[in-house]
Image (cartoon, rainbow, N blue to C red; front, side):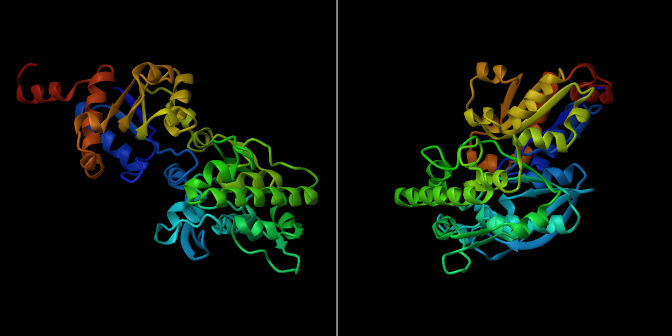
Length: 390
């Protein structure tokens, strides 16, 4: 009996990771009715991180927190024992901007801090924070304020939300934050190595994606520099050049500098959380995927991480996707035996979005026929049932 493990990320804007897995599994079972197929949804630290943890057996803890513009949003973190998995995208992310309107100067990470604070108050002592998809560039100041930090201007008033407000920081008081976070271990899922400031920093590289024009990028970069300088004077070290400090608009910097966080590649962290090493033992084939396989896939995205982990376990890997732009030689070098795309069997992109689950079943059938060892195929089963021969 063949054993298959499906560990795919979502197809963004179309199917969740769990839906991708279910569709591919249905196709495999049509081709190999006797196959044992497990689905383990994965994510790389962005949207879908909490869903992957829930699928791995964590419990959902719903709560209301501040969105990136201050409006309340309903979100949730995932909990198992004293470990909380928190997804920044779902509370302080671009997807939470009202009407999709970008707010490059004022969007805040405050809600992310509120979720962390709620988890800590509920008894969690270990925090895993996925920081992909953030809406703001506030250097993590909003997150720190929600955890008890007091950031005051020269007149003793709170500085306000967003990156533009960082120039007003005159006084920093971290005493309440330190009391709250004492003994709490924070691990950040981070796949970028940008510093906080400069030409490769949070504002310059990611600010335009969040709506900042060139003048605003320059203003945000200067504000982040002032924030780093003031914080360094308070804590005695300057972490602005640390790899990953520029992640999520500077949330990486705040987590490193103030929370003492450890930064780890998102997919590696998630594979640990879902117990991938145990899941892959004894498997004949691993199937992974995401909406588009391209050069970005090879730099910290979920499919590349799954392929690397499966290769270490000696298990072949194939990928499913909406579209694949990687040449076969690159795929093989990255550890993929093959890639199967929706666009190959359905050239209409809109139909790939609306009928993705059905098309993935077809790909699952093809993968089973092409890659699974032994066992009766669907055709063999049909022939046996009809008394005919292949």
